[in-house]
Image (cartoon, rainbow, N blue to C red; front, side, top):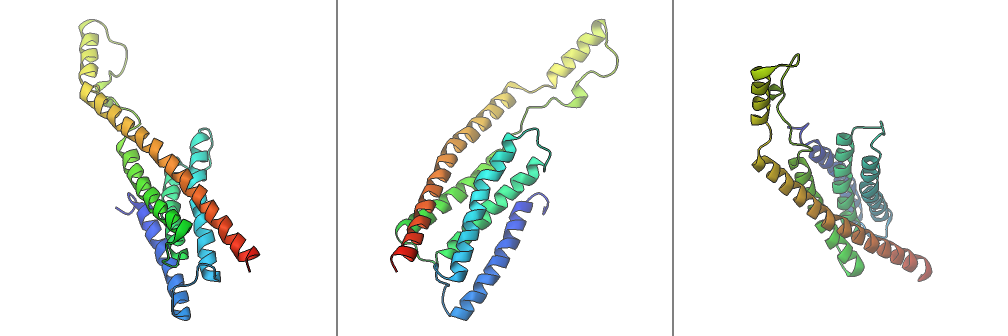
Length: 208
């Protein structure tokens, strides 16, 4: 169970650690740490970096098909963990205040994370190929006559049915539709996040 859903367990452990640190800061200040304070800024910056890593590293590794640094399953786990923990840290950074651009960014973050979880389900639900069982394939030396015909008929009967092929096609179409929605949402989120960060730096630096 833990191995199968390890990204969830890793995320929960990381969230528990971050929450403990944030709770200590809350107890010392007697209120939610300000977004512009040391804890608030630190959590926000680290969370944003994790979100950037979520968006870039897994995609880069997926394009490098001949790379040997890490299995794709491990990179997908890393992608999911940073995609959950990063937004959670950004939520803490907000000090539970959702006004203006920051509020829009937080709302879109929730939508993107939910979309990512749906994509994770779709990704695992879609097999890469429809496989023919090994037992259906003829084994040993080439066969002649009726024996070869019987082996061929057996292999054909155990092959993927039209319904299985149609199901696989429908699942892949669903994954493609999800991808066409998730990616624009993600880049919109980062555009708003950069606007928010730029505005925060401007007002903190030039409007004092």
